[in-house]
Image (cartoon, rainbow, N blue to C red; front, side, top):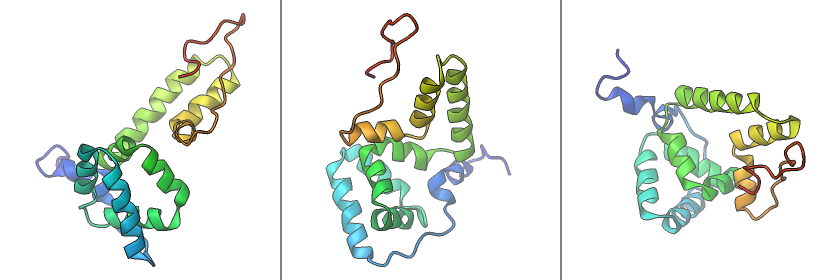
Length: 153
């Protein structure tokens, strides 16, 4: 079967690949929490997420996260566009692209601190930390004391 054949593209999405989900012990509370968040975000994003979680098990995965993992749910709430990208993507292709981009950036990194920054950014830790109002570790000044082009970004 050809992956580009009609109907196959949707099956390559992460949201369509979930085979099962957690047993949610308080589904009403988890559903309310998810719905409250969906009501707070941009209508286009909410509609896109609603469409993605229409796949079997995808909604149950998000309900499980809402109930059992406040940290992961905070990451989701901090960046609805990221959730849409993740649920919409072909996981293998997306993961390969993230690794490739990070690897290229690491080759030009000025040192270990910048490499660690790139790795944290790759997994979204810096973005979530900065969105929660916590201080993000500053990158060191470039050699010679010059300010870095990406400092404060």
